Image 1 (cartoon, rainbow, N blue to C red):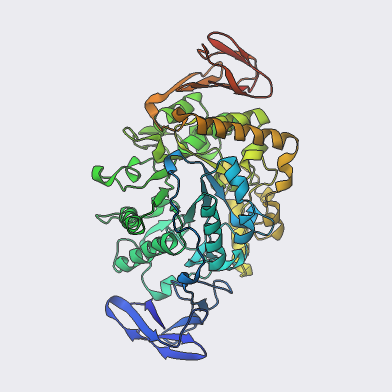
Image 2: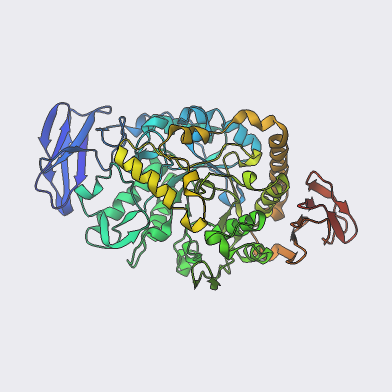
Length: 575
């Protein structure tokens, strides 16, 4: 038996269409409609009909086997096979996150094929696999940030059973799973939520269209929709944490912000399950209240992505100054983020033409995720270039060393560790040709502030754009790829073996630099990282003392009592 429920306030009639018949649903309180169906069982397809209109998928559809416009399919999560009864995830604070996109991670691009690469991740030293959005979106390929059926694992990746199998396989290998979810907007195709109720508001807007209604009339059920979705992934699919996309676009003037409500409910579920659950936020506000404890007036999120760290490292190593990179590029910016998380903590931004940010004083580095590459910063380039495509091998090694010795939780983007030759491009497969054309045109216009040639932007709708973005796993063992992978492995081993590199303590970070000579050193406990960012050989004061050389770029440095001599773009780790 199943009970079908739909929230559709203001509708005169809501019907269930299933098993070749159409049945009237019964009105309930606060805009809900319900129908008990003793004849319904898992595997049955169904849809809702609003005021005698066209059939629509269930907003809470657990499975869309034929895509965003098709019927929903009933499932029973209790039928998933699990072997993780004793599972406890590793601590996020001492972890290493690996961001992965299911469709391009393997040639097959499915949940089950991803399982074949999990042993490699474990051997690399990864503790948390962060998976880009997997809920149903338009077509068979895409990033997942234009999803519309939030409760349904994507049919082209393998559907609900496939996703459950991937999570269980991760847990069997000691890998925690973090799932990227997008609650700030919906995709342009298959977005039927507005037909059911006031899920959206005209009072605010986002860069992607209408804002979600989190604080207006009817917003209680809208908030419930998203909170229930988060709890479903954590409870029914055994996911260990969620990464919340662009929380700055979740506009909410309520006394209790939606993000705080979500954090409270996730903590409550964690207690019920007896398993640690975490939330990680993406925000461009440089607002530490997101990660401060609720007892101190914060939202109580475990960690947030640190854009300033990425931008400071990227601009320094590439020399790029387009768009928001105009605010970065100095060694002082790198020093600022390593000392206190944000380079902009009330400082004036030339790019924004205003002061922004707030000091993260009192917080641990464990409240921030640091990376030199991620899906946004690679994929939102015109050509999807990775850092290794933009700089030489030595500078790619410097980036890796900065990430893996920083006081933050480090994150790698798939293939970064071997300098994958495949770009990560923006790709879509909208079935609506007119929509596909608008997406392609919009993508070209998007890069105006970065002064990139619009005509060089690959067509997101082209199959070749997607195919080019798939990882080539055979190149790992060849030439420069193998050398870079060996460097990452050595850095990860050093981080794992050195408590001072994992303690998250800003007070233990000592940075020295010379903006003119272009050198920088970072000391954390027994480890000193020395970098030469100049085109000349340099003697860098590193107080070497009794330290010995642990890792170095291919052109060996020269050690002395109080300094290390580095070649151009040289890097050395001393311990």
